[in-house]
Amino acid sequence: MFALIDCNSFYASCEKVFRPDLTHSPVIVLSNNDGCVIARSQEAKALGIPMGIPFFKIKHLIKRHNVAVFSANFRLYGSLSARVMETLAHFSPHMEIYSIDEAFLDLSGIDDIEGYAQTLRHTVQQWTNIPVSVGVAPTKTLAKLANHAAKTKSGMNGVCIFHPDQDFRKIINPMSINEIWGIGKQYTKQLQKIGVTSVEDFISLPSGWVKRNMHVTGLRTQRELLGEPHLSLEEQYTPKQGICTARTFSKAINTRVGVQEAVSSFAANVCRKLRKQHSCAYKITVFVQTDSFREQHPYYGYISDVLNTPSNDTVTITKKALELLDKVIKPRHNYRKAGVLVTNLVPEKQLQLPLFPPSSIDEDDKRQTLMQVIDKLNHKWGKGSIHLATQGIKPAFQMKQAYRSPNYTTNLWEVPVATI
DNA sequence: TCTGGGGTCCTAGGACCC
DNA sequence: TCTGGGGTCCTAGGACCC
Image (cartoon, rainbow, N blue to C red; front, top):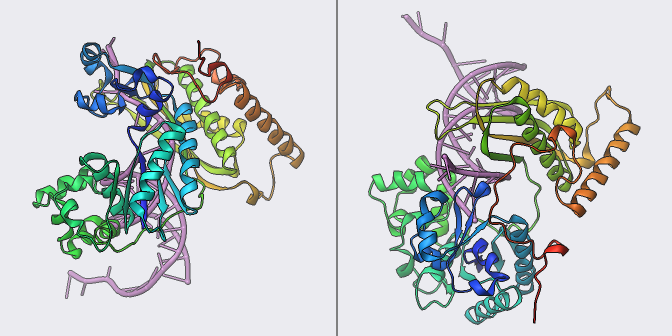
């Protein structure tokens, strides 16, 4: 049996952990640049604040209902996520961390699953102060639906179990197809067109139709809903196949230097992530975009190139990224977004050296040491404490974060203070 | 004034090979 | 008039997820 443990309103719950005064208040968390709503506490959902809505459109609601507003603080959420996952690891030797706020556990061999799930829930609450819901079922896709039921149906007490020998169809059949894991906006639209609206409708579709229109992934989803497991627990860490850093600028940038500084920073960030997972990249892509909301014909340009030798060196990759930027940027445009993407990743240790290396092995070693020092300093003193000059001293692309909470758990100067 | 970021997987189609 | 068959690899684009 698979259990899916999902943190309730995770980012909003994180913001409440060190703010007991907000325990019963509506709380929302905003995306980068304080652009739109990406998380809402239960109380905020009840006020009718939709997911993803631009912040400026709900300012009146915020004022009227005294909603607590936070800029996204991903450091804090990452740190609290680790605490939750460590707690969950006590409950099964087999766990898959699926996202920042979700994990699958293998609960095979547990007799009293209901009691076990309740204990798990209370333990996470007590140890981390984060509320979670638990769904248990014979397949991952069904566990997702069980979790959804645990969250939304009254009387479930945060736990919902689909035993294979029990008639859980009564619960899932009426559910809407867009609750199914793997059926998103487009498929929902397509399915509704042919009159398929409930889980039951979807299950009864001929598999030929599903295969034709939703490919093998759709077919897998259908089978999983019937109780046949087709997805297994992925316990092993797999390195990422692509790494990207992209940002919307708080204000449009109309100078070449401004965009160069942004792209330099993104390249540096991508390299830091590459080194963290011990990978090197062959291919680099740079993209820029003008304002897609205000311009009638916004410009989206992207360009890629491959390196002779894969690298995770900030100087090498930044140089290449700036070269590419020069080719893709058009003058007299107001840029609103840019990004750097690296793909064709290979493990650091298995580098294929070129026949005629451009630099000596000694120089490479020196460069690697330099990167290690940079990573250490930035880890200790904060991102960007030391950086290439091309990233700029006072860059124009700085993010807007007017409502950021303290880094309670990761910065000694921001730990909560108790006064008596 | 104001609209996020970072990933995965799958398929179709083109280039190229023998 | 009529134009093979069977592969591989790569890329772009579209779907999905949180």
